[in-house]
Image 1: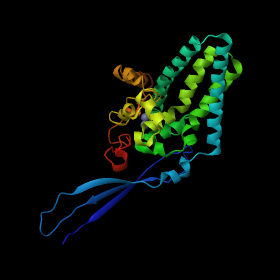
Image 2: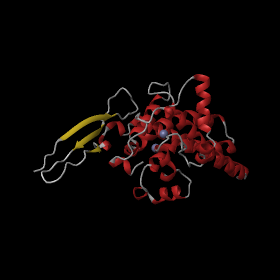
Image 3: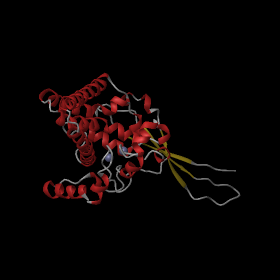
Image 4: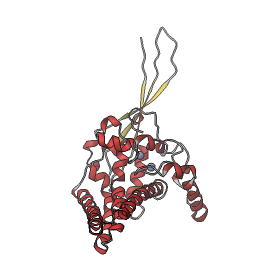
Length: 296
Ligand SMILES: [Zn+2]
Ligand SMILES: [Zn+2]
């Protein structure tokens, strides 16, 4: 007759929201230790499995969009559209298309670099109480603990933070300048910044769940793909930071750009980046866990 002693140990994996003071329903990490003995066979070695039991996060209100989130995303999209319209109208008026097109391309390329630098900074420095970007720092930390949860966030919930920054950056430029070359750059740069979190979400989803157009954009390298982003969630956790197209990742990683920057900051300010912390910290998540397995 089989004897099956069962032990469970529950730990809570914290998930953040944009209000760090609110305690969120948590992902339950269930550690199950089983040992099985029978009267006819020798005792099997203890087997330990980690099982994630995921509550229905889509019902978690902290992952849902609020009217404030929708307002800021709408405002960001409006300011970007106005900037883009000024570029197009200026192109029609002057019949000069090459300059704004090149400026737009530069905006697209530099937005990828900007996304990498910003992502690196929020992944490695500060915490939830950091002024201005504390929410995003905490979101970055939580994203590395439970990467798939980013796909559970609703659209405006995920984009509102950068939409806010985009609005505040682009609105004054819309009001102050009519130069269509300038707006060629600004509109493309701001569009990519505003939507880079959506590109990031798509990079965490499987192709079968994505619209064909998104898959085509990923396959052509115009936006960051799952295969380009996946390394960011594997040891040593300090590469592939760019999340627009990911075109800068190879160059930045092979030149050890961020490592050099981290050393400079360490020697100048004495601040260590989080990527230097020991591998047992929550930073290195258990990537062999059931639901994580196909999402990271
Ligand atoms: Zn990250
Ligand atoms: Zn990610």
